[in-house]
Image (cartoon, rainbow, N blue to C red):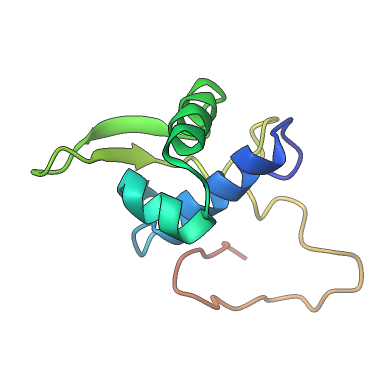
Length: 109
């Protein structure tokens, strides 16, 4: 996500959506009100930036909750070139064999 051409508002909102993601880090369904509270953005800014994130492919609408809140999928395991987040092996000098810190992602060794 960091390499994508997003405004600061769009990046903030994308991080907020990711923060509300399920334990696998994929499906997310915060309400506009929850996003407003988390980011301190106004309703219109949340709506416009959500639409832009959808257009950029960062959010993919996959349904709605029983209360009508959109359910989004975040293709977080891929970057714009289609590599997985584990492809690079980490930063130079970083210890190998990283562990699963938050229970969300794992990399095959």
